[in-house]
Structure formats: structure tokens, C-alpha cells
Amino acid sequence: MELAFIPSPSRGVLYLGPIPLRGYAFCIIIGVFVAVWLGNKRWIARGGRAGTVADIAVWAVPFGLVGGRLYHVITDYELYFSEGRDWVDAFKIWEGGLGIWGAIALGALGAWIGCRRRGIPMPAYADAVAPGIALAQAIGRWGNWFNQELYGKPTDLPWALEITSSADGRVPGTYHPTFLYESLWCIGVAVLVIWADRRFRLGHGRAFALYVAAYCAGRGWIEYMRVDDAHHILGLRLNVWTAIFVFLLAVVYLVVSAKKSPGREAVVEPGAEASGGEADGGEKPDEADDADKDDEAKDDEAKDGAGSAKKT
Image 1: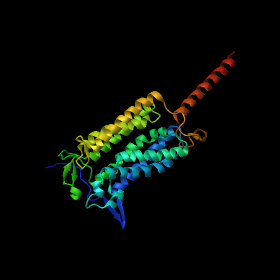
Image 2: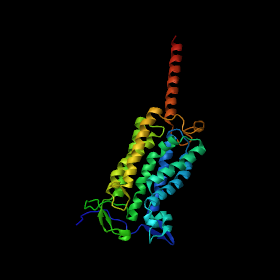
Image 3: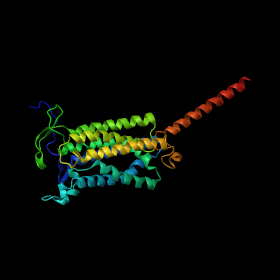
Image 4: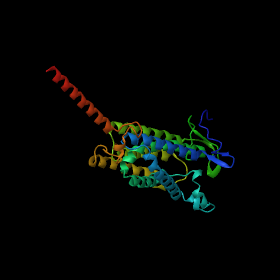
């Protein structure tokens, strides 16, 4: 008998008249807003203009949604194209089913288009939005809770997730809440990237690479716990192999980039310096702070010189 567990919502959608309000969609939308908000603050701190992150997100977010859905449909095509299934369901993104690998890949393409139109270096933009993306994933995972999906193996732990639905082959019971594990892991990844970025002044895409590597490290063991249907290669789920491969790519990029382009970009957005960092958001970039300190030192020297002249 379970003494404690995390209850699942009785339904994942509410109706405002004829309009459906889906918990999964709300989690995605809130996550996007949080990612843009935090990315904007970090972009301004690096010397960019306020609003640039949102402008580029207009390209990145739709591309990311399409990419995430394509990855899911391709890797789980049986859900939509096997006998007895309706292929039209492949377009019902609000019912769940986004693959993070496809979302990041096509989302990066959309961001590249936006950055190219603004003359902005893509790696600098990626560094600014990296922890925000991790937080967006943390929030988005709660959409799986609303849909009672992507849970782990059976357990009677106090934080077990209660599944009450029997639709699509589900078996009611208590399971590992892998959505919660990944949500908490993503929050930790965001904190790690922010700390490392401040401590080591990561630039040229290395903050984003750290996010990717840290996320993959967690996704690997969390994916291993899941019990939903998935393709297997050599006994491991496809997404476990994907996490391993992407993790290695991220680590290689970190090492190579640190050797080829140490430090951080001096300019992240052409023309932003002329408009003034404070006017764009009240937060100066690191380089501006250093310049202010140099000016203060020069003023002090000038005062000392003037005082010496008066004494002589």
C-alpha cells in the first residue's frame, strides 16, 4: 500500500466554452517566455540591445517546434502510420510529443537565420540563451505530467507518480516520475551554466556547449528509467545513444573552442555600443565596467597631480 505519491491530474485540458485550454501547451508557452526573459537579461549584460533575443526567438521558436515534432513523429512513426492509426494525429502537437533533439537542431537553424539577418554571431547568442533553454525544458516537462506520459518503472517510493489513465496501453499504478527528475535536472543545469559563465567567462558558444553536455549527462540515465515504447539499439533506447553522441560532440567543442578562441567576444551586437548599455536595459556589459574603472583611475591620477602642483 502506497502511503504517499504524486497524484496525476484527472484531465489535461479545461474548456473555456468551446476553447480547449491544454496544460501541455501552457507549459510550453510559459517555458518560452521564461527563456526569452532570461536570455534578454543575459544578452544585455554581454553588451547587446534589449529586444534582440525576442526578435531572434521569433525565428527560433517556430523552427524548434517543427523540429521537435518531426523528430518525435519520425522516431515513433508507429503511433501515426501503423494499421489502425490516423496520420492526421501527427499534426496534433497539443496532445504531446516533442523531441528535444529535433527542437534544438531546427531551433538552432531558425536562430542562425535570425542572427544572420541582424549581423550577430550565433555562438554569442547561444551562450546568452543557454540557461533559459534549460529552464524552459524544466517547465515544459510538467506538460508530460498533465498528459500522464513518459514515466519510469514501477515504484512505491514516497514521491512515486500515480497513473490513473488506462488509455494507449497505460497500466494504472505508481511509477518513477521521470518528468520530475528531468525537470529538476534541467534547473540544476541552468544554475551550473550561469555559475560557470560568471566564474570562467565562457564565450564563443562554450556556455551553450556546457548546457548541452550537462543536459545529455542527465537525459541518459533518466531515459534509461523510462518504460514507454521506444526503438532499441544494442539493448539501449535510441535516445540514450543520442544523448551519448551529442554529449561527446559538446565536450569536443568545449575543448577545441577553448584552445582556438579563448575568452569571450568583445562585441556581440554591432552598433549596440553606440546606443548605450544603460539605455537598453540598465545593465552594463563587463567590458563597459572595466572601462569605467579605468576612467575613474585616470580621474584620481589627475586630481593627485593637481594637488601636487598646488603644494609646490
